[in-house]
Length: 131
Image (cartoon, rainbow, N blue to C red; front, side, top):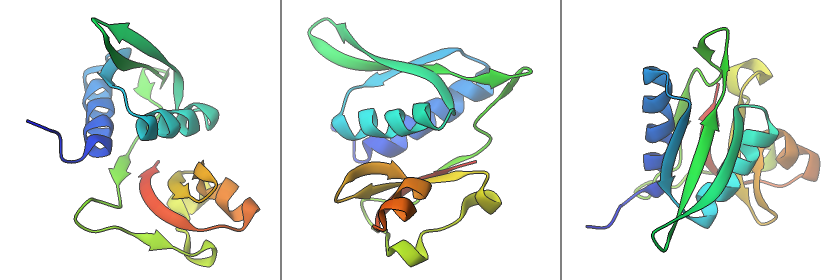
C-alpha cells in the first residue's frame, strides 16, 4: 500500500523518535524529504542526515539533536496537506514562535526556511513549522 503523505510520515517518525530518546531514525528516501532535512540541518534542529543504500533501495538516516537531555525540536507540525494546500505570499509567511522557530516553504527557488524566503522576497507552499 502506498503512503498518502510522506512528509507527514517523516515528521511523525522524527517526533516519535525524540519522544523515545532515540538518537537516529530511518525513513524511505524522497527528494522533498531530503530538501526539508537540509533546511533542518542548516538551521541547527538536527545533527546530520545521510542517504543510505539498504538492499537496493535508498533510505534517509537522521541523527537527531538533543540539548541537556531534551530534544531540540519541541514541536514539529505539518501545515500544508495533500487535502488542503496552504500557499502564502512573502508578506503573509507566518512568524513561528516569535521568530525563534521556523516555517519551511516550498518556493519556485527550492525548499527554504521562512527567513530565507523573506530575504529572497518569495512566497510559496508552507510545508511545516518547527519550534
